[in-house]
Length: 143
Ligand SMILES: [Zn+2]
Image (cartoon, rainbow, N blue to C red; front, side, top):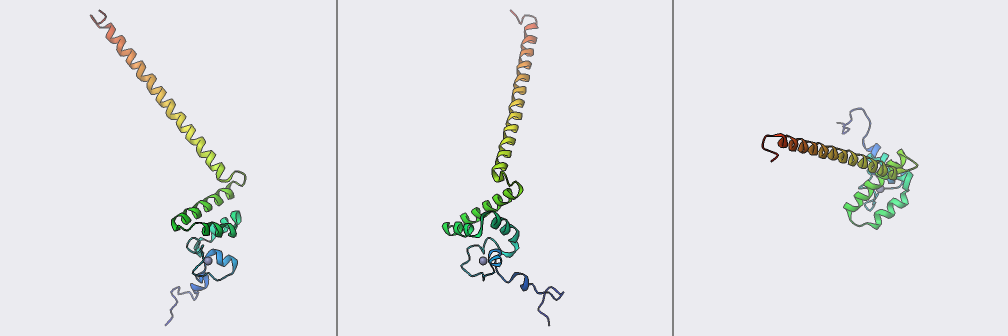
């Protein structure tokens, strides 16, 4: 009996061999102490390649070793991947450009809200003014 689950003769182990994307890139064995293995399994090669391109493996490993907390490490990786993607999309401004675009959008929305509020206040003032005029026109209303 064959133990191959693919059914097409290819072996799944030949494509992954358990090494993380970083160790595969460095052509070294991925050991139990590999700090990047939990964050960059072979399936996350594209993310790893981006971070590698924009930050380098040394910086990545250094940041991981500086931070003992696993949850914080995950956030650092998320942030670095996000930054790397932003730099890839916009080599000049990177994540700063994204930040500026978002700030502009917030300002625009605030302006819309302020205009809407201003218009609403004007409408309310007009209604109150009209109501007062109507009251004033009622017989006996203007004493
Ligand atoms: Zn590794």
